[in-house]
Image (tube, rainbow, N blue to C red; front, side, top):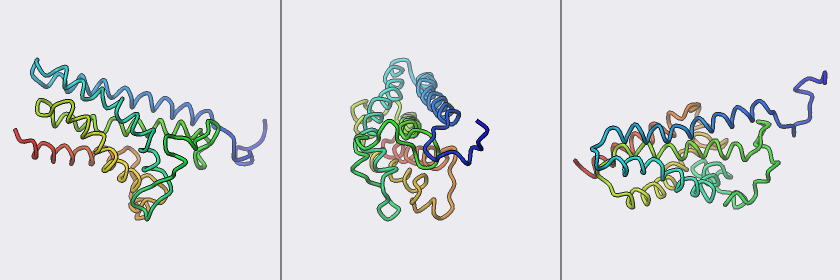
Length: 196
């Protein structure tokens, strides 16, 4: 009991950090219905349901995409600092329930869930730019492709240990680059492409 935290073996789970990551994941997930209500209140009455649905379907589409390939592309073994890939992370097959994430003393599955919530909220943020201008089917295809081709590489660049932007000193604690700049620029491009 009197042992210092630094003298304990490296494979222990820090219950405080794990609990905080779980609580943080829940809070990020709560942003999705909040965003749906916000965007739903900004459109005409006939488009409220579709606009709100664009936020909610991101949970389903990106949730599946993240588990299948998103995590492997974002946090897998770096390929030149530009993209990650690890076949053991495909569909999370190689992530054992007791496996700890790096030196953080929390289960890797908790980290997967936490990062997955950011992967979900980012395309949901983009939906405000296409409200009343894009069909739900087109939006579903767009977010699946965008998350795989834009979000995952950007997450790897900034958040993965071998990402080329991280190695150049870029720090992104609150998702300013990976979430907000990526969503904002993508939303602007979509708005310009779709027109009024």
